[in-house]
Image (cartoon, rainbow, N blue to C red; front, top):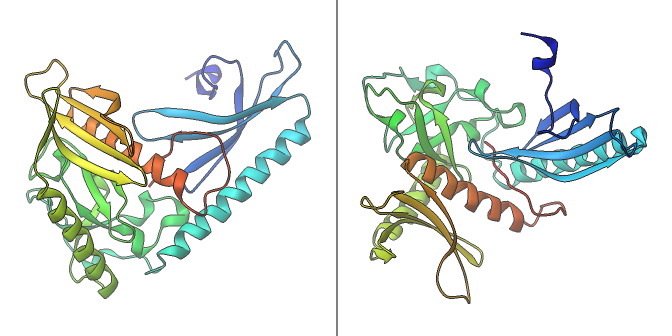
Amino acid sequence: MSKDKEKRMIADTGYEVKHAIHVGDCEILVAENMKEPNGNYYFVANYTDNGLIGEYSQCMNGADYLKIMKEFTNRLNNQIDKAVSEISITNFQSEPITAEQCYPHDYGQSIDGKVVVIKAEVLRPEYRRGDRQLVLVDGGFGANANSRGNAVFCYHLNNGQHTRFERYEVLGEIKELPEWAAERLAVIKNEHESKNQTKPEKIVGYTLTERIQVGKKLFVLGENPNAGQKYVTWQHIEGRSGYDLGHYFNNRDKALADLYARADKERENTQPYKSHKSKNRDDAR
């Protein structure tokens, strides 16, 4: 592979990434373009990626390298503070869970609906904790027995956040749930039961099968097997009529990922410990 192909570029802007550090739900990066016509050779931005869409936000460029680097370090420190605050809210278990605490991982068995342990090494360093490893599996092709797919959708037991892992990232089914995890599992299952008791609603031929309320916004997933694009995610804002901003898909896993990405973005924007920033897309594990 040539040196040019190994370079990480900021889309087609001509800026090459020189420094990038990922902490929590966001990557902070600095890039350089010594051919920038206005002399703004240096660039700093936040980058997020939910597995479907990558987005640069809070972009800033300039001619003063030290000013850009100061902005870079300030944003990095804000991300560190944010991650510390996030972990402190649900500080259940810092010790990682090991293979000895799990049943051997058997690909011939379904893990759908089970509590499994994610391998610590696939998590970001700040999240290599026992309370981040435990998840409740909630579908995905990879959750099935002897599946050719890998996607495993699940809920983190510590905070209820929905996410996706790959089947090969699962360490195994937990043998004995810690007390805190058993309590959190009961809460999540009760929420699911309440959601499933909701009467199905149809919008322009799509049956709403999933709902996530975040503050004043409701995010939904609709399914219509007869439509050209069988799945759609919408948002509804309290006080307004109807649903808008539809994202359409032919793959249910991608639609689910989009639904939870939209909800996670809104949740992150409304969290009390969120540092001030402009609108951006968010995800993370």
